[in-house]
Amino acid sequence: QVQLVESGGGLVQAGGSLRLSCAASGRTFSRYAMGWFRQAPGKEREFAAAIIWTSGSTSYNDSVKGRFTISRDFAKNTVYLQMNNLKPEDTAVYYCALKSTRTGPYGNWGQGTQVTVSS
Image (cartoon, rainbow, N blue to C red; front, side, top):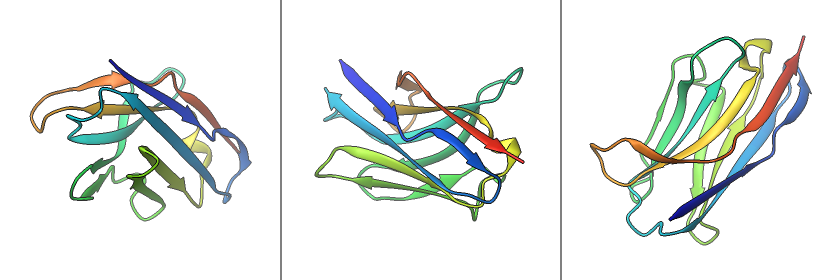
């Protein structure tokens, strides 16, 4: 089993920054990639960013490109999402997820952390 625990959410003013962390434990040896997703009230969950664990290659939703940065720390088995220049429309619950293979789904999810951006 894989456990993912997010932290770092909170309330911030527009233009501010937050860094989310996701600590992974358990059977993570077959990890291919980790990602961040978000779900705003009344909306469907959407992809925000992802990183391939071994190569470090990253991908972003256009709505966060240039403002968010995903990174990982091998030693801490943790993935981060640095969020700068936050906007009220970034308000959402942010979820960390893990996929074990390139073509498979994100099969492991964290409990989510709330990010609220005030205008």
